[in-house]
Length: 154
Image 1 (spheres, one colour):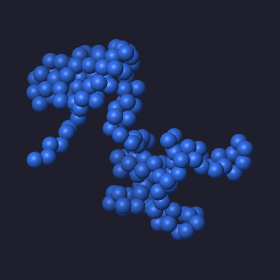
Image 2: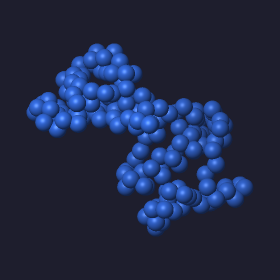
Image 3: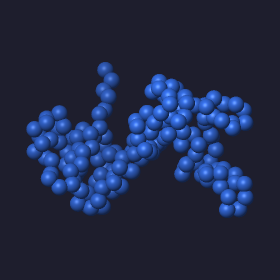
């Protein structure tokens, strides 16, 4: 249904235009569900949500909107950038080489050293503003990049 709406509408009202059919109060957008757990209609029957840390309707809507806006099949919303980076590390197998910008956030570097290297991942750090240096450090097999732009306020 999202393809029926223009980009601007999807930004404001969500992936399905923001119309919440069957909402008991007639909401025109998905409300924020501030609950940790969800009741079930019976033993072995689920509403689709169990525990908010795993999933909840609010996060599902955010992920649906992001997928719609990006033209993606699926999205994963994380509470922090470090959580997102942790998920990304799961994509790489032992022996993978990840070329990183040298000015990564210190917590990211520590995560790479303490978790990534134990899993057999290899990391190199270079000045990514120097394209020749980047090219020299790309390995033929298993090449991956992590670039993180940090906004500098002046």
